[in-house]
Every structure is written in C-alpha cells, then in structure tokens.
Length: 491
Image 1 (cartoon, one colour):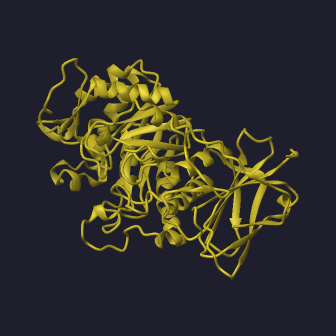
Image 2 (cartoon, rainbow, N blue to C red):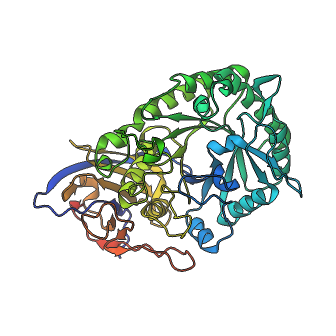
Image 3 (cartoon, rainbow, N blue to C red):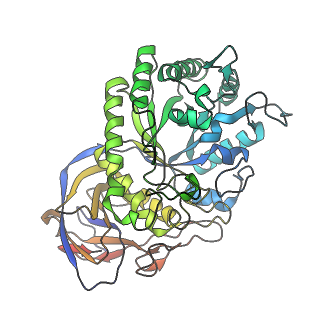
C-alpha cells in the first residue's frame, strides 16, 4: 500500500440492509484545526462493586469475580490504556476488612464485606492488564455517624486508603454511587443533601492530601436520565458542585452516569416506552438524548469546578444490567460508537466508563464464557484507529448517518485521518467525502452483522469476516480493505 503524506482511514460501522433504494448524503470534515485532544484513557471500563464481593448483580453469578483467568486478562490487555472503575449500588453497602481473618458477617448497617484477598486480586489484575483503578467508596448507611446520620464517618475508608498508599495501580477514589437516588436505594432517612455530600467529599479530600496527594478526587457520580421519573432531584448536580466549591473541595474528575434506555429488569412486568429495543437504536433521538445532560454537566463544572475533567463515569445502552437480546448484540455497537464520537467532539468530555468490562448483558465480554461481544471489537477498533486529536465533522441534511473524525492513531503515518461513519438508515447509503479527502487512498474497516438483516446478531464481521479471539483470548489482527481514492464510500 502506498503511504502518502496524508491518508484517509475509513473506520466504518454500518448496517448492510438489502434494499433497492440508495440514499446519498455528504459530510464535511475540517482537517485544518483540532477541536480538542482526548486522553489515552478516554474509552475506559468498569467492574461493578457487587461483582467484586460476589453479591447479586443482574444476570451474573453471585460469587466474587475471578480476576485471574488468563483469557480475560489477554482480552482486557488489548484495551489498554484505560481506567477500571469499581463502583455501583452495592459499593455503598460494603465494609472493608483488610485483616488476615476477616469477619464472616458485615457489622452494623453494612451489608457486604470486601476482604483483603478480594482487594489484592483486583489490584493485581489492574496492574497486569495495564489499567489504572478508580475505586468507589461507601457513603451509604454503614459509614454514618450514629449521632448524626447525615455525616459521613471516614474511619473504614481511611483504613482502605492507608492500605492502598503504595499501590501503583490506584488513580483515585470516588465517594458514593448515584447519591441523588439514595432515597430510592436506602430510603429518605439516608438521603444526603448536596451540602452534606459536599462535606463528605471534603473529608475525603483531606484524607487524600494526608495519605497520597497524587490520587485523584473523583465524583459525585450523579445519575442523569433515569427514565420514567426523569431527573428525580433536578438541581442536585449543580447544587453539589456549588457546595463543594463553597466548602473548598476541588474535584479532579467530575463524573455523572447516563443510560439512554432501560432493560426490562428495571420495572419487572410493567410496560415502558423506554425499554431498549433494536428499533429504538435506529432512531437518532436515542443518540441525541445525552446532549442536553452533557450541557448541564459542562455548565456546572465550568461555573463551580473549572479545573475538573468531565467523565461519563458509568454508561451503557440500557440500565439494570442491559436489555437481554439487545445490549449484548451488534445493534448496541452503533449507540456505543456514536456516544464516544459525539461527546468527544462536542461536549468537553475527557473520559467515558463503559459498564461493564465483563458482567451481565451490557458487558463487553460475557463474564461466564469469556466470549467477546460486538461492543468489545468495536471498542478495540476505536482504541486502535481513533487518535487523540478530534476534528470537527458534520453531516449535511440528515441525522441518520453519524460522522466523526480524529487524527489517526500512531499506527498510521502522521497526517492521516480516521473517519467514523455510522449508518442508521435501513438501506444502503452512499456518503460523499469532502473534496480535501477525495484524492486520498482509503483503508476501510467495515463492521456489519454476519448476515445483512441480523442487527441483533451476537457476532460482528469485519469486512465480511466474523471476528473472534483465539483460545487464549488474544484478539485477531484487524485488517482493513485497502481502496483507491474515491469521492465517497457506500455504507
């Protein structure tokens, strides 16, 4: 393949529908200036706290997560560098027992125990795969002062931080998971007002400064777009960040959670218009829902915590473990790649943490069989092809074709461009490239379901070949289709 001063690298995710009508649209890419530069760990992943201690976690087995499996380790290594965030609802129910003879039953109002072995296994895994760890600390009923349950008691957290002092895998600590929903999780009695939550963060900040000042202070992990009831406490995010500023708390990373749709587990047998279906994944509305929340987050961070990076600290296509038959299928990759491109280009976002690396239906990897799902391979391609520098891209006259461009990763010559195209049309679509790119050769990476109409397939094909890892979990080499210069590409 000839290498020119600049190449166009087409990273294309599309649906190949058999249809006699062809659409034609045009895109615009400004290659003269970058919009922003993303960190290497922009695409990151999580393991839920409940998996760590072996409590109930949606469709996963209720037993402590086995971090030592070589196949899992090899698949995760391929996604480095990244952050592994450990957090979740059960994170606010865990007691940390780092003794050699741990308790068999959680004390007081704690519900679960994390042992020294479980924590050490997590740290070893994070180091081995080349990630860094953000750990979510308990702010639930257990660590509250008995004389004032609105005050956080940091004693147990301090034990964990002291133990973690010289552990190289640690990037930072969070405090609480979705505190704006505490009145649903624990009842109104244990709900923390923004000023009370900010006071707890202030305590954690002091501990970090005393024990390991290089650790990041991360939070507050507020939940946005909780369908059915909407934003339950509308001003919680803004009020918490403002209270932090007033109390002298300085966040390093400001985090919020977002899921555009629900799974059926959220409501049981009740019907709901927000339950994820393949059809909803073909509508631009699903993809654009996050924009207004990202704007709210950005405005509050700029006003009250301007030094902080913004991260989507937990996200997947559907809540409550992910919708079976949708979250773990090809169709979910369209949403996932779009959110990575959309927020990277428009919304001052420095990181997105995918729920989960492995676990339940929304995991990138099947936790039990260790079979990678389509989102795993899409994430792998994003990591390999999309460089850190983001270019401004737009699509003319449609929202059903989504387009994002980055300067290509270091695996390609300087000056190369990676173009991510996502086709939501239910027919073949021709995308006309801007004139500045029409003279350049193209390396095409086209992700499709194995059969043209099978958008809920458990598998994904790259340029027609189904992607699989080997027995040891090593991903295949992702080989493009090299094409000559052209005025456009067909999705």
